[in-house]
Length: 557
Ligand code: C2E
Ligand code: MG
Ligand code: MG
Image 1 (cartoon, rainbow, N blue to C red):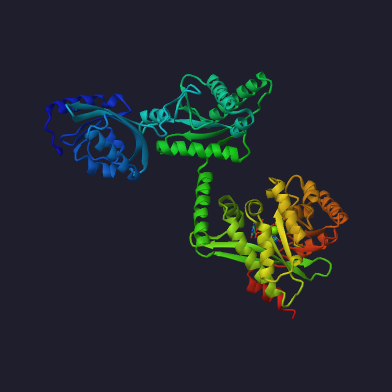
Image 2: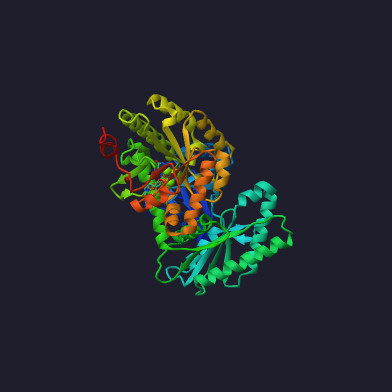
């Protein structure tokens, strides 16, 4: 016994409370002021940073148990109770769990006095954070109940699956119809799902607009997929019944569980969340079944984001700008170069732009990195112009930069700083980004164009509403994507399409650049469609400034 207690009555009460421990989720406590003795239900020692559930000297113990910035308020409150200036205790504050993470608790106690002195405080502590056992809105059990259900199996979880369902774009239902109607949709969705389940399939409501179905009856992924389709049909029928007042879809993430898997409960919930997010990322209104390769890729991408962030902080260590030549297709002389970003790190070596550019965009790091490229590329352009005064530099600009930074001002300022004429700078925009365009993007681009800087529409032929952009953004140059060039080499139909495209572009008084020309034969066929500029491995691969200058700039002089 590592505590001192001089009052046998208290001990009896503590022993009685011990017996209640297994029947409740809350924690009972008694505090004896005179002997500075504290008792709490034994389960608290498994959850919180507490060595024992019976101890003296609460000041010392609370210093390691209570979230540091809440300690002062608590000690003051206890002091007031001890001095009998306060007879009840009702405080919401934070304790630390075993991992040192804060957990919100509500601590309520009644003080028992003897004469003018406070003798004991007896009460109850409950967690008020995210322990949702049940949800009154949907009438379903909550995440904590799911965890308890999974816990019941112990290490011996039978074969089955978790199917996590989420209403697509639920935010817009709330925005368009109000939150009350949104609540109603959650209730109706819960009903639709419940209708499709048999008695051994358990349903829980997770966060906001998400539900989880747990089926451990030996069912397979294809059973889960069938259930998802059945639920979808049920929801469609509901939408039909309310005469399309609101139209919505659901996505599903399936996590198969069998003997080979060794997931912890938290992992199962996390992986089901990943699966649902993948279904949504793939376009919503569909299901995705968990694949460890995809998850590893996702983890790698998050890891890459961390590495990129560190590289940006570390003065752009690992980033390098490569330059690929662009040639006039008639004279076959150098027109300029496209600046292409490269990234190298110890862990992954040289990383493909198709991996790190999206990571830079997702994290917003494309804004500082884009600024860095702008300066590198303009400085390179200025140095090359000593030999070729009309040399043009093309820079890829992501729509994130256009949306979230003052890109027009920055570009103009940088051209002045490096004394590069605006017409010697080409800003390349990819269609895929512009697809999400808005008035703001259009205004920024027009502002850039007014300065005399040229605008190129990159990756033309890979998106959907190409022609609309020709009118909307009024670019100066259209860059035909390599995938289009490749197809034109293989199919007569695509080749004719490219030829028609060229007529159209020239009819609008724009220039056309064909990307991805790899061989002399390709160059010959492409030149017949009359592009203005050519780019591709046939002319030169992207390389660093030193190599570029040696190979394309100073050789002729
Ligand atoms: P992009 O702007 O369309 O760049 C052309 C891509 O085609 C480059 O790929 C280039 O290396 C590749 N390419 C050029 N000629 C040939 C060829 O003959 N055959 C083949 N197979 N490929 C050729 P890279 O460097 O991997 O860049 C891929 C994409 O990443 C770029 O496509 C661009 O969208 C993006 N990107 C690259 N650098 C930057 C940057 O600095 N900022 C932004 N926002 N995006 C960038
Ligand atoms: Mg480009
Ligand atoms: Mg391109």
